[in-house]
Each structure stands twice: as C-alpha cells, then as structure tokens.
Length: 99
Image (cartoon, rainbow, N blue to C red; front, side):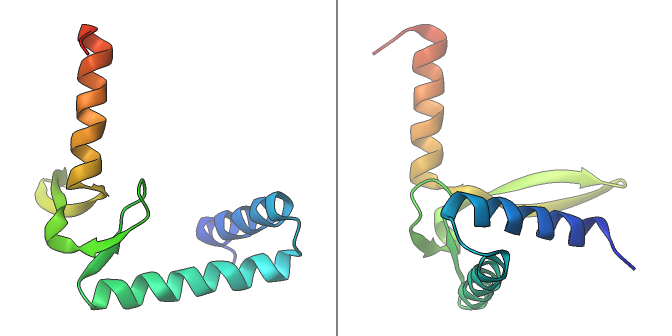
C-alpha cells in the first residue's frame, strides 16, 4: 500500500535529483544517509540547526509547546537559540524600522 509519506519521499528525491543533476537512485541514497546521521545525532543528544547548519546540544534549542487532541505536547524548535534571536531581532527591525 502506498502512503502519503511514500509519495512525499519520492517527490523529494526527484526534486533533489533534478537540482543536483544526479539519478533518482543516488538521491534516495543521499536522503537515507542524511536520515541515519540525523538519528545518530538525536540519540547522542544533538540536533542540527536548519539555519546555520551546525550540530548543537539540545539545550541550545527552545521548546515549542502545542496542544494535540486536548493534550499538551512539546517539540524542539528547528532553529537554535542564537538563530532564533537573530530572526526575531530582524523581524522587530522590519516591523518598527529601527536599526
């Protein structure tokens, strides 16, 4: 049975293959390799910031609090604290026009 997850993975691999001028098989291997690395980092207590690309300790990321089916849950943000602060600073400057 094909799931939405499978379709998304196939589409991502095709896009990656076209952007990097590689075959779809090579793109799938690259995706699997990055997934394995991410899992190893999580087990070791680290995460990669999606903006700066640096692997940092989980203590250097903010927690996001959300509700799901009436239950409060937490997740780790995708930006580290430094990048999140820089993003918020830039947003403030754009909104209020301050330097």
